[in-house]
Length: 184
Ligand SMILES: NC(=O)c1ccc[n+]([C@@H]2O[C@H](COP(=O)([O-])OP(=O)(O)OC[C@H]3O[C@@H](n4cnc5c(N)ncnc54)[C@H](OP(=O)(O)O)[C@@H]3O)[C@@H](O)[C@H]2O)c1
Image (cartoon, rainbow, N blue to C red; front, side, top):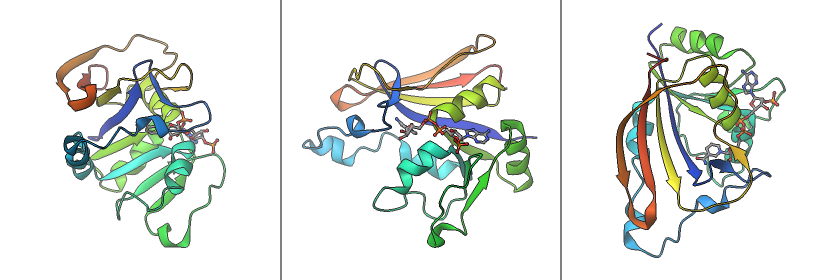
C-alpha cells in the first residue's frame, strides 16, 4: 500500500493544539501587518497536495462550526465511534468511519488516494503509534497557553524524525518539516 500520511499543524510553544475546551482562538495572529494578511504559511500548497483528509470527531466538530466549510469538495473521513451530525450539503464528501488507522489507510488506498492529511491530536497520536505518519509540518506559535490538548502523547517506542527544513516567519512563527523514519 503506497500511501503517504501527512500532518500539517500548529502548536503553542508549550506543545498544545487547542485549549482544554477545544478553543483555538490563540492561533489567530495580530493581522494588522500586511505580511501576515498575505502569508498562509504554505497551507494552500500543502492542501493542494493531498487527496483527502482523515480527522478525529473533535476536530470535525470545531471545523463544522466555522462560518464556511474550508475543504471545498475534497473527501473528508471523520473518525468516530458515534454518529456525528453531517449536514445535507456535505454528505457527498464526508464519510464517518470507526476503524483502526491501518484499516482506514487500506480504505483510502482502495479509494485511490495517495496522500492524506491527518488531523486532530488523538488521531495523529494513533497514526503515529502505528508508524503510519510519513511527514509532519509543525508550526510553532510564540505563545504559552499553559494547559490544553497536546499534539503528542505516550508512545510504546521512540520515534525518530529527520529534520528537513525550518523557516521563520514574521511575528516569530517557526515552521519545521520532518520526515519520520519508522513510517518509511
Ligand atoms: N492547532 C491546530 O493546528 C489544530 C489542528 C487540528 C485540530 N486542532 C484542535 O484539536 C482539538 C481536537 O483534537 P483531539 O485530540 O481532541 O482529537 P481528535 O483526533 O480531533 O478527535 C478525537 C476523536 O476522534 C475519534 N477517533 C479517533 N480515532 C478513531 C478511530 N480510529 N476510530 C474511531 N474513532 C476515532 C473519537 O471520536 P468519538 O469520541 O466520536 O468516538 C475521538 O474521541 C480541537 O480542539 C481542534 O480545534 C488544532
